[in-house]
Image (cartoon, helix red, strand yellow):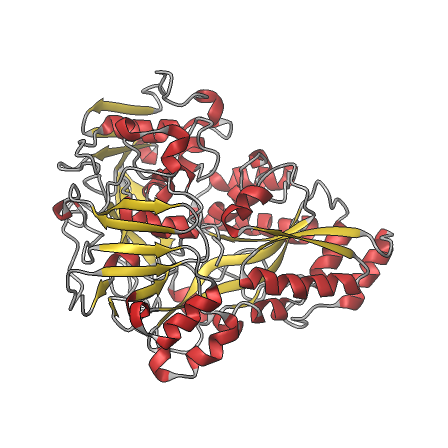
Length: 600
């Protein structure tokens, strides 16, 4: 599937008391681990993926990672992809394919440790623990582990962490998450350090302090209890100062993780081999079982599925990376017990929505008409039916705590294939003429192409002259992320970065974040929504939940910048010689760090 933003579905239960973190215990969860052979996942499974996340101490952060039962060393795993990775520079990574890739070669201050049942703990990655907070959560201190080096043997120090954060302020970085930068320097953070660290200037010690080679201190103007989770995002992985080649870094990053790039042919293939500078004693998350990974970025989704169903030759050692089973071959997979047992399943944190470019479709009645007309269930069918998704009522996924399953302002649960009569009434009230042009941008994936046919047919029944524009999946979000893009509507997907509506509503619907390369794809800039966002960000979680709900309702019902289409599920295939395969609640895909070959 084309990279859906963003990485994970999880819930956190932390409290800051007298400068320390009080943590709840992590409870068990299905997460697709124990029950990956079950039928299609339900909202009950999604709710179970909300289990609390623990912030780990030094003991939990000490490597090596716990061995996977039965794991053997050796061999190469083949990785099937439809197209190239969107990015390899950590600072640019904010989509699912690159996020999955990141865990193989990059490392950050923190990361997620996941057990076989999908329970999650934030641990120190290159840091000694998940972080120490003080001053009521406004200050976070990290100590670096000994023995962390990049692939060239250069020791990683606090200066490299500072460099990593400061380069995100420069124009070199136009994609990727903005949480930490904006928390440190405000929404217009680029003004604080427009050239990043490249001209010798740095953020002041009042914001980011590195008092010695092993210590990094983040200083905020309000409590930031989610910092350990934000820093676990691939977008905050370390870029060593000595290795930074600015824009060129996106094609040849320096590895800190267990693997490094040996060969890269853009748009075709990539080979990863073992990074001999990676020390397993410093890593509580990753393994280095296989000798390497062979990425093929020209294998279509139907071809991936066909090869893996046949399970012959190299396909026995192969996995789907972030693509799912081809919808047209779904029955061949789920009705064959031998094939189905080679699948992983889970409920993803993503919501697919038809986003409106508010600069071009300014009449809410028109947006509402299109929303009513969307045949949601047909769109789901084009993505695997009940194994691929579920009709959505709102823009917040079932994996978020407090999800309201009854919320359905456009009546999609009663009329899952749309209400054309209602849509036509609204268009008549809006005075829209027959033959009005509507430009629809879609990704050139099998799903994108199939859904384009469905959506175009529905909109033409309303009288629109639909101009379909196909975009390569590798650059889709870059293209629709341009403020002056020439498209009226486009399908986008979004999932929470961690289990708070703040990581959905803020990046996607905050008017302060309307900019080229930003994730506010609709360009919504509503004063009331903006105020509710700022209010919620200053509130305690229980109180904030009510404010986020208020903001969500206003966005969906009173503005409608994006029509909810469906909640996403995942089902992936892997070859019979792949060991350690399970659904990861952290990545929402096959768990990449535990894989090995049964017969190397």
